[in-house]
Image (cartoon, rainbow, N blue to C red; front, side):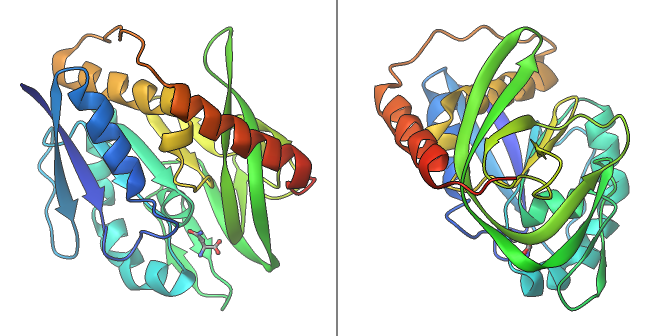
Length: 250
Ligand code: GLN
């Protein structure tokens, strides 16, 4: 069995809304393609060896948990930048997404340092943006796909001029409830507010991330045989319909 190595950043602190479920989906879909996913928890005091991981994952968390780990995550910043430059893939969800930016000014007004990998910053607002979300994305030029999930955040994320969002908001609040965009994408790094967890109801994104991770390890972007994703498609459809019926309006 070939292997892929995932660095799971601060799994004990940043893991709300079953974000850990994203790892389970990556592991299952990797195994169905002949890859064993080795998941390494990367917490306080860890050192990251260049090239050690094909994919980094960080989940969401309350302001309190973010404040507890932000200095440690920022300390890993240079190594994460090096890994990114060397082609490792990244998936960051909500609180983790915010901390991959330059900083997150939380609801107490404290400015939590970020990694600065994504061209953005976040400032908490007075009311939370909660609800089902539906996005339209174009990760591959000319190929539009949808992402469905759930958001719950006080943070308003502002992308730098020219920065690429992950998708256009069809229903929901997205980055700041105003821009009409959600998330951020830089090369093989994806940041998003979408919980759920995200990947069980959006298997195409799981495959995209796995493809990037395999390309990091082998140098070649694989072409995957389609899997029987009927259940995932149903979950996506239900989530998309809920978003359209109930999601916030930006
Ligand atoms: N604490 C952050 C906020 O409220 C992130 C929340 C989350 O990860 N769901 O915006």
